[in-house]
Image 1 (cartoon, rainbow, N blue to C red):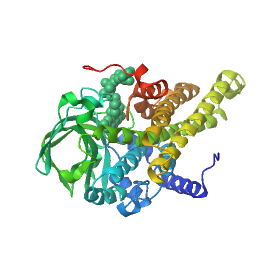
Image 2 (image 1 turned 90 degrees about the horizontal axis):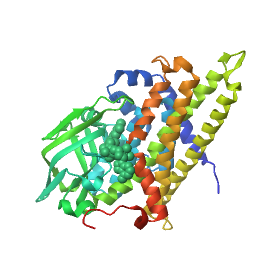
Image 3 (image 1 turned 60 degrees about the vertical axis):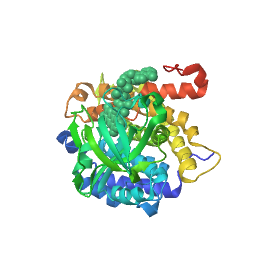
Length: 414
Ligand SMILES: Cc1cc2nc3c(=O)[nH]c(=O)nc-3n(C[C@H](O)[C@H](O)[C@H](O)COP(=O)(O)OP(=O)(O)OC[C@H]3O[C@@H](n4cnc5c(N)ncnc54)[C@H](O)[C@@H]3O)c2cc1C
């Protein structure tokens, strides 16, 4: 076992750090306060820096890097934008493009991925619908095949990056799941697509966006959209027809590693803020960090954060074995438990850290002048359920460790 990052990874981390110190740290509060999503000029700059499509192959405009490198980038970025909005934009444009690279058609990959890598297009995920996000097998958006085209109808909800996809010069879209067969077939009649809301500067006909006002991480938009007879060419289908459920689960396994990396990067910043505060805050003639009620809690949270980091980077290493190095010892299913543990632990320890740090800052921590609350609200989005509800992570772990037959509830008709 070797717990060190390689020289190349360390170098990459310091390059990302320098970029974030220069271009993200001075702007993150202003971006969060503006509530207008990720600025297009920053997206372009991040594209030029090579922060998107890190694990995508070079022939499709990617960096030809690894998931470990993508996790390093997001972890660092979240330290400098602890509201995690810009890191969320980045993680989406790393995780979901990898799925397009793995399973998309040659034409779709060549058209979309170089644009995402350059910061001219956005590529996120659209599974959630108004009736509930956890039950992907219950997807209601339909795609009906007519010759070489698919006709989409229905509604997606709570989707990150809708505004950015429409504002970027070329456009963008989502890895989108839709029902392509009988409802009774459940998860076996779903297909995935590289669905473009805007391409070549034009918003597609029949696409109607709406926006939500999220309480946190306002530096990336969150919206929904209606699809009214939207036509999509079959070249944008990702993978085989009616197997979309499985590609989506693989995609979540990739993206959730980066979600967890964002959470721990932000929490690392919060603990560093606390360390600085401890050097100045004195009560009863002593530093507040000299009270065991404070320093024991700090130690406990520090250790939990380190444990989460190890689990997250181990999951990234495993994803690299499967998707980048194609090591036949491992299969995509091997990622289920490691990734669910990472997504469960990363955001939960982050929120626990924020709640303590805010208390250590006392009344000042409860003001808008003190920036800590921005990280608390941002990381809480992942405890609520972005990229999968926490209970679903617990379910995946229990199902795969105890055994599906003892855990999975019987579905109607079984
Ligand atoms: C800020 C933000 C950004 C988001 N961005 C995106 C995006 O880009 N793309 C996208 O597709 N979605 C996105 N989502 C939606 C996200 O994926 C969903 O919130 C998530 O899947 C949960 O779905 P839901 O919110 O409808 O809750 P529901 O699925 O309705 O769940 C409600 C509650 O029931 C619990 N629950 C559900 N099923 C079970 C079960 N089997 N066992 C135990 N408990 C259960 C859940 O844990 C949860 O607490 C985003 C959400 C947020 C908050």
